[in-house]
Length: 137
Image (cartoon, rainbow, N blue to C red; front, side, top):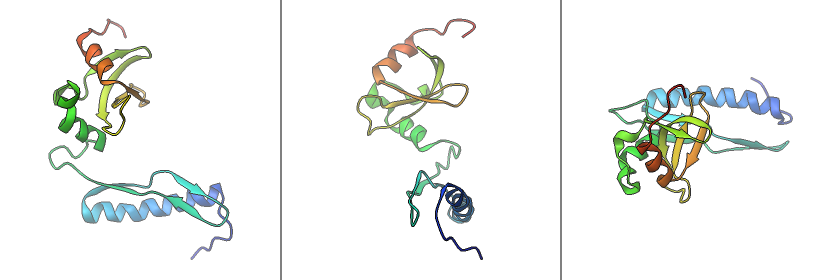
């Protein structure tokens, strides 16, 4: 059994691996999606905020933001079918990946082909969905 004398970046990384393994057991036993989130540390303590969400039985691969989009898109003038549709943004082509209802200014979450996440307003998303994506983008 290992003992920690001081918590630094390396120790925090090793702790994350151990905690992630333990969360794997929680995921299997309860059938939920569990993540560690961001970890903060000082030389004597580590703080983290684990997040556990229930998987959608119909679409188990959907993120919580995607599930929220499907349930609440009509409040923003969008439809649940808009999830995953591609739109043209100033940074290139992006697909709608979810909705954060607590974000007032930029509630729509988008993701480019490289996996980078973007946020934009519901009005921008509605207008972008009306426009066509140019060929070769």
